[in-house]
Length: 155
Image 1 (spheres, rainbow, N blue to C red):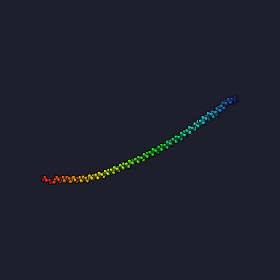
Image 2: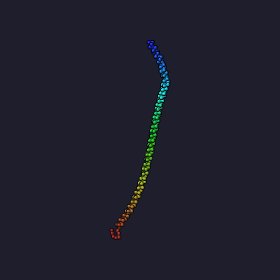
Image 3: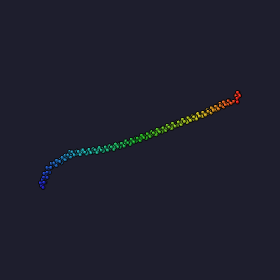
Image 4: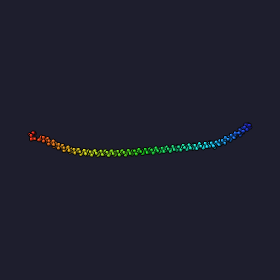
């Protein structure tokens, strides 16, 4: 057993520089390679997550602005519809007023024409009456003069 222990000690002593070299290499790699890579990865992760957070904020802001734009657009559209309706009401009111005025003017013209026609009718009746009387007188005179005894002895 002593021999085995001696061989193990000899192997340990021979492998000690390799073990030290591996530890030194691990420390050097840790400081020169792994730490910088880890730092870069951390910064990259922070930048990526920060960019994602910023992108989410911008998306939320854009969505909010889109909703505001749509709301203002809808309000403007409703205002246009209200204005159109008001303009339509005014136009309809003006049209109704013009129609009423035209009806009143036509009615006044009709009344004036009827009154003139009534005056003309009355004048025509009077004239017909006078003409009828004068014609009646003429007819009567004509008949009487034909029926009157003449000097020729006719009855």
